[in-house]
Amino acid sequence: MMTYTTKQGDMWDGIAKEQLGDEKYTDLIMAENPAYLLVYIFSDGIVLNIPEVNDYTAADELPPWKVANG
Image (cartoon, rainbow, N blue to C red):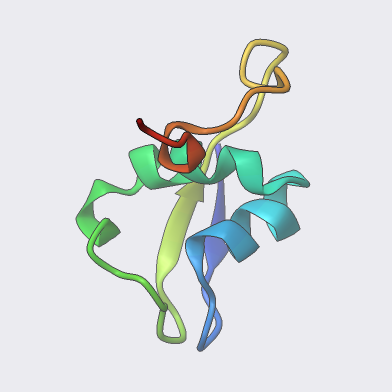
């Protein structure tokens, strides 16, 4: 597992794109950092855990937070 130190204005999806190459990994990063789930826009200097992705998590599926209900 690696870590990422936030910059002022970072958001979950941008961190996923920058660190793991795709916004679809946003839910994985959020799951690794439950203390920050209520944060929408990060301040500078917060250290987040960034999970490694494998073939299973790399499937071309939408993350749960992007799936439309109804």
